[in-house]
Length: 226
Image (cartoon, rainbow, N blue to C red; front, top):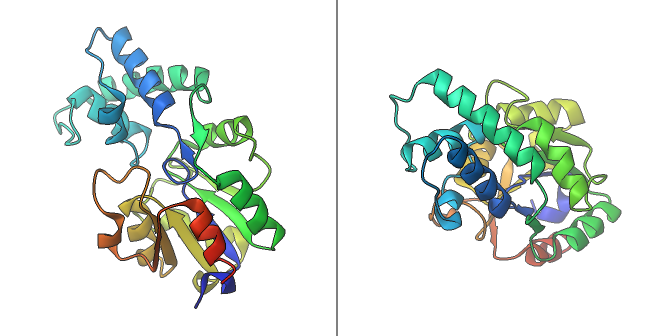
């Protein structure tokens, strides 16, 4: 099945539509400053994005992509609350849409594709960032990392989208930049697109075998009409 035969496009957010790492890094370092802990450079923090805010904070507290399993749960939860307060204050300071995203989404929507967001970002943060970047009214549903107990790479958020949109897996396409997106799509029997940019922990997205790989959003938009 070609992309143009799909009806619903399920988009990841961070690293796929939005380069949000600069603001995430700002909020992480503001949090660490509050705790009298050393800051990290933006490139390091980019490697920690993709598994949700809790995992991000666990990595910041551990100072590594490998989470310290001995972290105190209360400390993590308290730190997460501090981070979310900081992030809500700087959610669209330096974040930007990737090249061609706004124009591409408008083109896809005008052509009749139904658009949805499935992200591991906390649900309450999705609409503010979409609205702040001028794409707040393009998506039928928004599913966040805390909408359900499970998040990507678990297929549950994708299966919820199928139910809410009343469509089958064959009618959908999951589009993302991370192995979490591709693995979740495979588990839900949904075809997937992997973008080579974004946040994939330094790994080549192609090794997870999405049905299609693209280097830019305009390439994907064009392929949707081929």
